[in-house]
Image: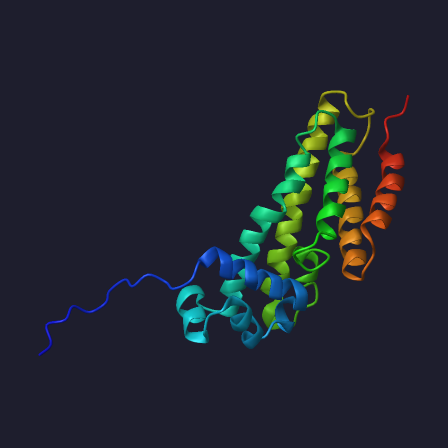
Length: 202
């Protein structure tokens, strides 16, 4: 009988954060259902057994990849809400979003919009994950605008929820246009128009 000690708890031969980023890009580019296991494992640089052993399933991989994306990519948009006024926060939110949607180094547009808006019934959970991510961003924006209203930084009677949804609709619409090839300067020109609708009235 061999006296060799079995290898227990052997460390992974890959960096989990890196492979999640690569998986996110595949989902971003092709959508959840369009992202094949072959495309995913090729981009991630791992084989299928490693994928299943580490992440369990394609859906669990997507959940992990999207969570990482949401933390890293959306953090910039949330930081915009730290601006001192509601108008400045909205402007920073929309401009940083337009910049991110057209940045080099990743597919154009937004994973939370492109990843799975249209899914078959068996993958409805994917659309729900993405909708929850967008709703969390909208909720953070609504909270910021509600605080602005309470502080008198918005005109009396402004509906903070409706205003937050308006801002999100602009940002999400920009994601669709960016994915179709719209240039950054054209998105920023659209931001200029949107800001006129929310500019403080003298």
